[in-house]
Length: 391
Image (tube, rainbow, N blue to C red; front, side, top):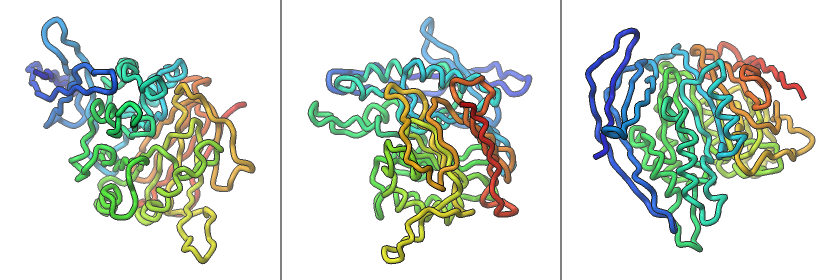
């Protein structure tokens, strides 16, 4: 049996009675590896802004953890997110996770931008590396929500060893509430949290016209009520705009498919990983091209999102340092250092983003930006950015 015991704590009052929730147990095989028992349990009818303690297991094998549910949804509800991409499990990965945990801003939910364990970097995609990665992140993921994005290192397709089902280890281990948003796949879905509406997309699933992901996003964006959740955020793995040589323009075909919608619906910010470095764009778009007009250069656009690449979690492949020169006009700041991001939603009009390098103190920001909400902005004035990096 898969049983979770739940106890709640709200304010100074503890509810002593315990409830339980029953889930499911999965296993899977990958080449010569057989997983242990993987437990998934959905706990329903939780109160907002409440600390819950939960126990997994029975008897002497039980373990106790806790988490805090988000506040009720509302347009001016403040909330803080941590952001990490391309983490892996190296010394640098540990430094990134530690800096995120000890950041004074204290992210309440972590937005993960793809490329988790890097098990595929080992012979036969050694799935024992998925086990060690799970133990590595437990110190954080057992206590706060992680919102998952799939990257290329989650594909795990190797026909030579008869492994042809994409995302098999990832989807067995990391469940997401995709059906709640009408999605047919765990690789694309949406979540509402405090004053934000978060859309997760899959860079490595079909996204052309009439594909399930395309049709879902076409239906999803008009549903966003900016008077309820003013901040519209998109997560993906492969960035639309990237001025590093590595992975240059890999996201171009997806950009052509989805960027017009991002501008039409005034997406505030798009977070991506994949490129093992950091980059922040200006508010720009490149949607005027129609095959005959020759307009194929990104231009400043107040209705467009800011694009942030945070693929610098610390994985074994290391940093990418070669950049296209000269730096394009659309690129506001770029640096090849390991680190993480913090997004602080202040109210319906303002949010603050900071990028933190591993080599700096926990509170030090190497780059930062005040974001003005695209829907509630009182003017089209540019956001104030402050790059405080010391080289």
